[in-house]
Image (cartoon, helix red, strand yellow):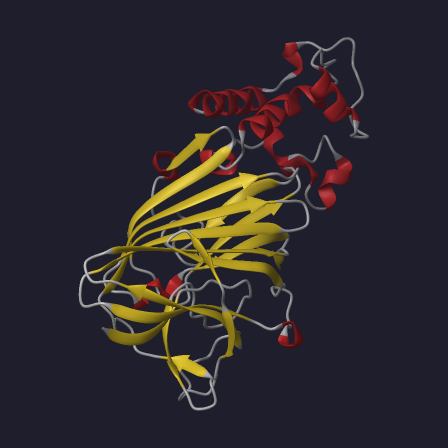
Amino acid sequence: MRKNIVFLAFIVVLSSKVYANDYYFYYLSGGSIVPAENNNTTVEMVEESIYIELFDCYYRISVDFIFLNNGVTEELLVGFPYLSESSRHGRGNSTIYNFQTWVNDILVEHENLPINQSFDGEMEMNVNYAYTKKVLFPSNTITKTKVEYYSGYGINGSFYTALYFYGSGKGWYNDIGKMSIIIKNNTDRWIYGINMPEIYEFGTDRPRIDLQDKIQWDNDILKITLDNIDPEENDILEVQINRPMFNIGMNFRSLPYSFQYRNKMLSNGDIIFLNKSQLRILRNLFYAFYGYNFRDSYLREYFSREDWYIINMNFTENMLTEIERENIRIIIEEEDRR
């Protein structure tokens, strides 16, 4: 049996360089640890399932990993790097709490180890401690691990962000075979983007893949499945949320005239992350702007919260512009796909 040290980890801080959900480490004297070389094991991550549940003031992340050891039996130190409360700084940083971890469906104890960040300049990451556990990976055998934690949201521009760093998955043998991203939104906020290099080109909003073919919906739970992920060490999954699109920025104070999609066509990318309830609200928003008297109690109550919603008993369909009608059609098509 060969012993080695690896980190299976994800963190919730933005930094210039991050070793993420799984990276190799060596012990130093005094009990601290430093990163080791990539691909120093025969253990392969064949599947990674990332569950993100969004709440009003925090989010929960739970990740299931499935490994296959193609070589000799190894005992690895598997860990979760994080930034300690006393060292936190910057607007993207937030505390993690209620951390738990499992091996083969058994809840296990974990230790806290300091990370040495002066390993020949290699450890340039914004973490300084790690939750660790030893895991035995028998030869030619599947091994499962799991981690779970809660965190507050970060901020990226005008968006609240739920973050998951997966980049150091490249430290395992071969690519990450399959990655599933499952998101449940329990908030009144809308999802505006799920950003990661495998989905969008760096620095642009140009998609690398057709998300319409990758996204699946099941009772308002969103799922994206990707295959053969070969991440870079800094790669991050970021879920961006904010208020409904007609209530973002200063212009929402001049609604209904300032809503851009009264004069601009919607694209699939604008609405692809909205659940059915949110799509229904967006579709009826165009009617609400003209004072339509909703018979449905939910819609009537929802729009009655807005100062600009004034019932117009003389409403007719002819009030809608051609662009508004087309946007309603686009939303209906997306609803029918669900």
